[in-house]
Image 1: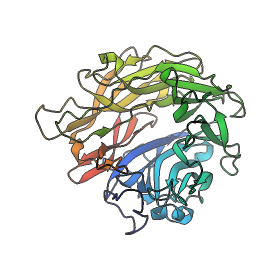
Image 2: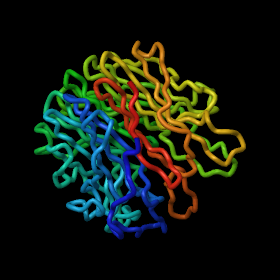
Image 3: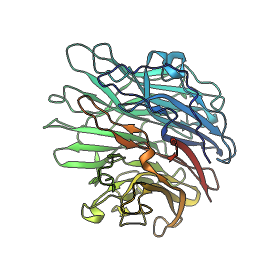
Image 4: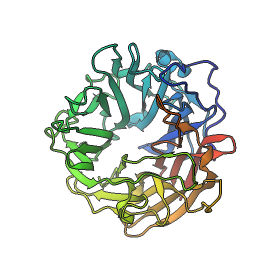
Length: 459
């Protein structure tokens, strides 16, 4: 089912002013995320980037909800994170990286990055992390709370807030928002994990602070793509990509006191090496593909507390192409299973995975692959798949969710100053949830006129 619609955003909202002469792709929809009410899985809430700019960000973060487990979807609204969404977000030209979660009482929380055009690093440019909440199922939203706001200066270091993710404790009023904060002073400081925390369901927020420092910057250390997961005992595990002297790894840290204390600098648990090759366009001379390389997606079983992570991994093919790796932890992130490949068509590239747990320990993973591409064709046939397991990952069954569709019609992204290049982009992450009896995927795919958001249900 198509969920997104032609853009209803006002003409002229936002700005194209920046370091490159970029433009947005009208009606494009990418990077969806999906959350289910923990007390009523048939209540689903989705967000995505609407009208993607080809340098960075989108004109707005769009929202829709389903009250019947994904069978139908309500009206689309723009959240107040950018000028096109109005409200307190009107001071920001663009928004990006939406995240969504649901806490007790059906309170919905959404977060996003917001910034001023493409020149957020220049004097007067702004980079922010914002969070808003709704107590009426997404009909109305609070004025965004500024978790962090950095303003560019003509001199001195600049900062850019990146890759926000939010998680509510399904059994208490604690809410956790995490991200990484890049700095131009990379020669003198590591890039740590930041967190914003609320103990009362988002009515009040503790000051944002660094909760994990990856260690001495020799020569460069960084956390990236931080993902919080709240375990059934109330402890919080943040999984992230760790760049350091020893290479690139998936790593984890855990707090047992609602985020008050965390492991010491450099003491993260190493989950597994990450060796993505990156998704290559099989069409000679075709545009590059922006995928989720180096970005794991994570989930927690709300009953048993099992943690899962999936990512693009080339070691299964000796570095020839990316498959989808899955690892599990049954002891709160202290130890992890040897990664296994879960995509079934192993002779073609697979990318942009998502993972989620269902009832009874069930687990599902979605991803795109190129098995339907015909060599020599100018149509980049791409399909979306779901594999699911009810025996802890010992065996899997596969379902086609959508496709084949032509990835060449995806909106461009990643245009940078001094370049003319673009990359085909459906999003760094996709949505997946459990509605109590079926998996629901919320994913980007293309139609004849560009990209849209689709929902699919699999029993």
